[in-house]
Amino acid sequence: MRAIHATRAGGPEVLSPAELEAPQPGPGQLLVEVAAAGVNFIDTYQRSGTYPMDFPHVPGGEGAGRVLAVGPGVTDATVGDHVAWAAAPGSYAEQVLVPAAVAVPVPDGVDLTTAAALPLQGMTAHYLVASTYPVQAGDGVLVHAAAGGVGLLLTQLATQRGARVIGTVSTPEKEALARAAGAREVIRYTELDDLDTELPALVRELTEGRGVHVVYDGVGRTTFDASLASLRRRGMLVLFGGSSGQVPPVDLQRLNRAGSVFVTRPTLADYTADRAELRWRAEELFAEVVAGRLDLRVGATFPLADAAEAHRALEGRETTGKVLLVP
Figure 1 (cartoon, rainbow, N blue to C red):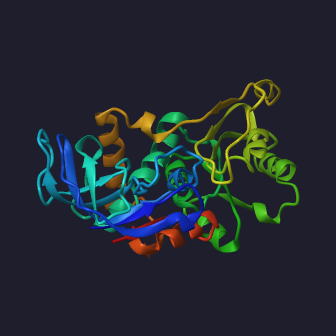
Figure 2 (cartoon, rainbow, N blue to C red):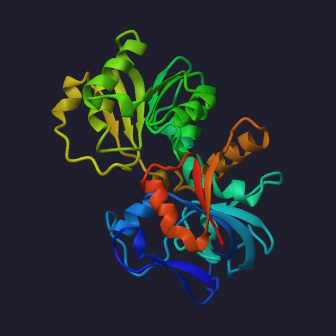
């Protein structure tokens, strides 16, 4: 089968196509023909060495496809089923072994390309607004990178809960996407001379001087200070990613001075570790898609062999919505 190899830690150039032996499912595993694989920032962290990995390896953890074979002990999937997943290592390939425990059924009415765009970013957005900080009607919410894959979904889900969303974006085109997803106000951070001071001032101006109840920050290093300063008293900063780099160690006294605020660094694995919770999140999201209440934007699709170009586009902020690789 064809797959993508990350040969060593480094830039996108370390990704190259390879011919590998097709895997065979072991106990508790599904062999799946990949219809599309999601490209996510965590893939770039692993490729670059920011997150330690063994090399060479096949990147990717997200996708959707058709079950080709079922390993011993699997009782809730059969050959021919359509499934999606957010945590199956080696998904940049024509075939991948998916632990049955992390596979979720794709309902009728959802094509596999759409299904591949949902698991990681969709369930991330779901746990952020439903569990990490349960958004309520009337809450002020700041969403960084509001036109990105998670950002568009976060904005929609928070708006559906009655929140007033302020989004940050880099271009007029991305502003239009964020507004279409429900953002009440949009700030173009590229037009600010000093993000750390100007962004919080604008946020407070839009919230009668109080600040927002919660900031969802997947950007990290370049936005952390501005995010902290945008919170109201006892607000929460949810740092769920680091697309601009990882945040350096923080003096906890800053939380006191900012108004007894909270900071958390969640990860999807801890919000889907239980099979029932995983199914709940996936089923709610798929139901929203089927009902037409959740718009999944696939912003770019690349052939599998062009994985390096997909990484360059993602890291270069050239994409909106979801990025997919198609074998």
